[in-house]
Amino acid sequence: MHVIEIQGLSKDYPVGFWKKQLRPALKPLDLAVEQGETFGFLGPNGAGKTTTLKLLMGIIFPSSGSARILGKDFHDPEIKRRIGFLPEQPYFYDYLSAPELLDYYAQLSGVPQTGRKQRISEMLDRVGLGDVGNKQLRKFSKGMLQRVGIAQAIIHDPEVIFLDEPMSGLDPLGRHEIRELIQSLKDVGKTIFFSTHILSDAEALCDRVAVIHKGELRGVGVVNDLRSSAAGKTEVIWEGASALGSVSNYALEPHVTGDTVRATVSTELLDTMLERLRQQHARLISVTPLHGTLEQYFLSRTSDQEPVRV
Image 1 (cartoon, rainbow, N blue to C red):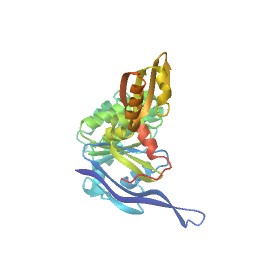
Image 2 (image 1 turned 90 degrees about the vertical axis):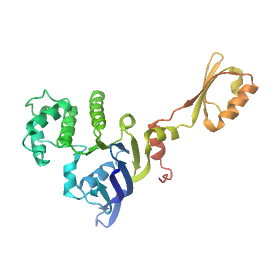
Image 3 (image 1 turned 120 degrees about the horizontal axis):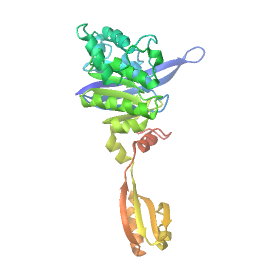
């Protein structure tokens, strides 16, 4: 089931002194997210990630296109009760405590008064802030504020959760804590759509990812499949350093230790290189395909080459 369906969604901004020219912040976007999926929306700064999320949240209006969330038009007010949102740089009232802030958002989200206090306590425990008491938000660290932000996004138990750069500006410990929190939401079946430019987080959490660059979708797919498509090299180790000269046109980044050579080779040239080594009576030690990384795929899609249509 498509929980999020985006069809031709775009956003142009007028630029110039007379505002007569249009600059595309998001080119027509087609995208679908399945129920229970953790979906990563990847791109460098200024790629159009936040613009897309603001459009889906109804904060700004599209120049063209449409979207559906949970089977309803994304402008339908009823949808707001069934989704949660954490903006990239949320502003919270500094002099409120975490329980007071969550009580405020719980009322806005329609959480019944009966059991609301218990719900707030459960959410604070869930995000690791059960012991903050009445400490004011202005005294919170960046990581603590991010956790409060996620708590307000899930206080009403939404079906779909949108997170805009949830790990931005966090130290390694803070990133780990937020990753664990997102994983816990994934484990209970929530559909999570989050934007990020931190590829290791997307690789660890996401079922599928999409890459956007300069407002244009460059690729989308299952993380493991994209990593495989970004591979294409094999590591070969052999004994017989004298054979290196005969395969110098194939061996990439060779390292020689005594009589042992370690090198990589493009997969399409592997058979030719192995045959040359056999002719030189080199003794093969190992032939190991190298796994691609999400970073390799990301870089291939955000280069200035002609974008790959998907």
